[in-house]
Length: 185
Image 1 (spheres, rainbow, N blue to C red):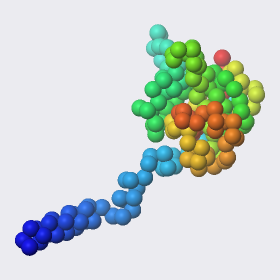
Image 2: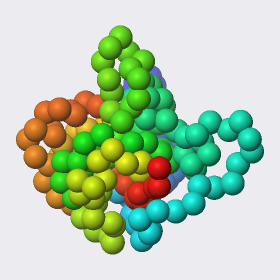
Image 3: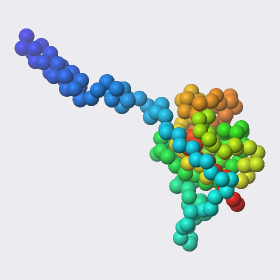
Image 4: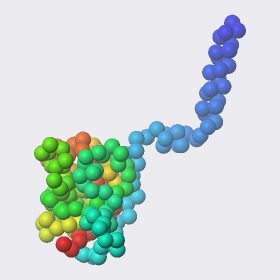
């Protein structure tokens, strides 16, 4: 009898401690996966071209243009960057529609498999219209890296992906843009 009273008392104490530690909303927020949290979309209205930030001589071109990461670095080791904000400067490889385009990953780092980065522009915000003129030109994109899980990504961007984009990029990292600008060559 003493043993069952002790177990009951310990369980009650644990329950009280757990319940008093934080509010229900805080517990639920802590247990939600990071991908369901909406990033704050702060679109930038930018001119078609902008000057590169000032840097010291010998700085790599991608860094001189204001980038914090290279496409190949993101696609080569995406786990460390999921949920993080990055700035990428790269050539626009393919334009799928006015809100979806692919950034060139450069020379393959993974045995001949070229890994480009799908970039998606949310429906909300005043972003530039991406069209075929952007193809083969450079763009600076700041945004959040997420895994391509179609339902979660569609919730973040506010529009439905085409089946071909879902299939091609499923399970790969995707950049959800916060600001997009086209750069001069």
